[in-house]
Image (cartoon, rainbow, N blue to C red):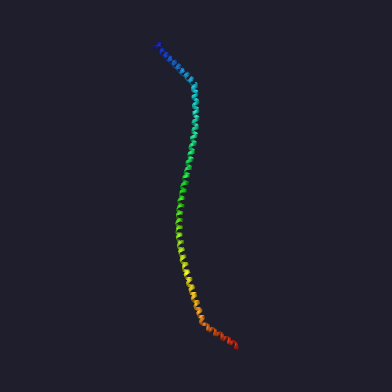
Length: 167
């Protein structure tokens, strides 16, 4: 190797390194200037504010989900209650229909009993008239037998009076 030539490439390498350091330094200065600029600071503030709003929105979203879950549970409970009430209503309707049928049946029985009572009343009236007629016939028979016995009764009375006088 030639002593003069080996220094050339090292110079080139050194020059290149100096240029690289200078380029990086300029880039670093530009970055620092831009990082400390008003627009960058405003951007950082906006980003922090955005993160705050995002956290607030996440909290509100969580609360909304919790409210939705509570409402779903409440809706399920309402649906169960509705099903229970509808079943109860159907049972009440069925029982009401049974009662109406029973009432109709009882009205029929009442009408039948009214007819029987009316027939019995007519029969009692007929029997009463028959009994009165029979009683009048007995009275008439009894009166006619008394008329037949009356001369006999008079003679017995006379005989008793005569015996009493003799005694």
